[in-house]
Image 1 (cartoon, rainbow, N blue to C red):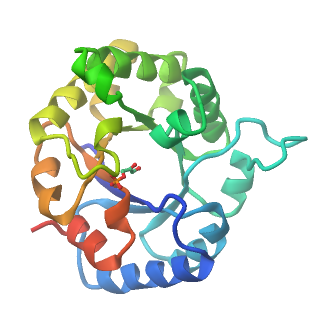
Image 2 (spheres, protein in one colour):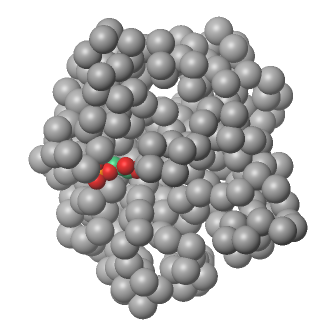
Length: 251
Ligand code: 13P
């Protein structure tokens, strides 16, 4: 059976004290509940140690929002996958749309980051998604296909078994404009097909594909019910325990 994952990407929000507080509030809110999904938090780097410590021994896991593909050396400002893994981090985002579009990362960089994450024993979440003009030109599937193929082609079956994919249409991120469940289902089904053509259908049927982009308590249920949507990658609505818990336990 496919795993279901609800992840909160805090982006550049919450210092280590605020992050520890939010992690504790989430733990308290999860107590006694029985989430049907895995819960993963993506704090900023500086909050990773505090949040990891608070969540130790719980089922909630921690991920990094980015990483650099080299292991060590003269790369001022960067953090390697092995450094993250040494902290007890389990996941890393690779190719978030803000990394691609604000910081100029391309598919090749993303592919190297994804491989570095796998090499350090992390589970990478490969983020893909088209710009508004690409969607309006009818190119959404093609853009996503290139992003998926460049990052994943050449992985071994074992490496692929640890990959999670997140579809985050750029026009839906932080805009309040959400893809409809049908929009999400359509691209998620395209992604599942691409994975099946690179690897095999059975392996690709096990890959969780998350949706991200203006997810809120009011639309979480319908998105989670859409075909081939196996979870959610939540930005703004993961910054308060109450709204994130309402997404983990959707009405
Ligand atoms: P929002 O939920 O704030 O639109 O952000 C989505 C996102 O980028 C998660 O990684």
